[in-house]
Length: 329
Picture 1: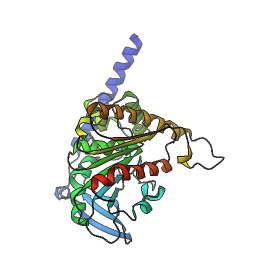
Picture 2: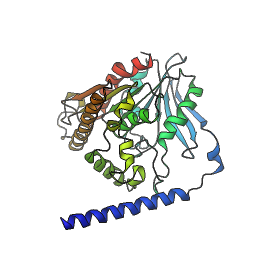
Picture 3: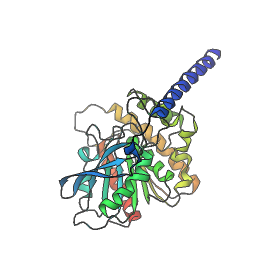
Picture 4: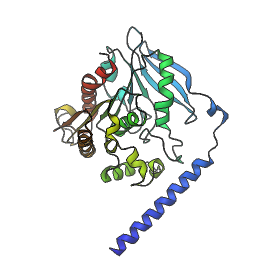
């Protein structure tokens, strides 16, 4: 027991030192004059009549962020769904556009779909400190205080918004709705973890970020620090009252929904990840129930962490929760 105690003190000391170093680096960053300009569109590349890439300057991060934008056929004012990508933020080409049928699914829907490109391992939140490798993460500010207003002007929207995230961005999608009350009429977590302060989640998230040589404690501090609870949807479920809420996950055991080719190896990694987020979703389900907040919860007996499952969850979220909240079809 004494050895464990000494080890714990040593770990806390080392972690605290790491956070202090990261915070010191953030203070040393001096924003340029360009950062004083407001958020705005700085470039548009049309890929098709309804699909474009819109580049937006973010003062909060002092850089240009590209966003895939899907527009409804026929134009006209429409609501907007902010659809977040997974762990690497589509920086590696892996995301809703290339790995799912999202483009086809939304082709006949009366909605704008905005998919930011970037934010790998950022959990789409405002980090406490800059990271030496990936720089400044102020994604909450970008997604709540910068991008929506820019897109409202650029697309001529109805100013009705929803947000949905998958895997890494699932829990953060719900957190964004909590941190910016009234901005999103609906929020959905698709195979994400909406219980970030749970010990299992804190460990998994820290390992995930740290595995990419990024300082995980620059995000919300060391495990157990207040930021983990402040950004945990399950700990703030009462603040989702008035927002249409959807959360989905599966057991991790592969099933027909995964559409796995015959003869393929068992998806060990996908099964383990989905089982973990299933625990998170169960915790969140109990939390919204205890808070008396209406929510649609889908916890399947079969399904691993696969794009086929994510697509199915997105369809279910759209028809059950997002479209009705946006007043569209």
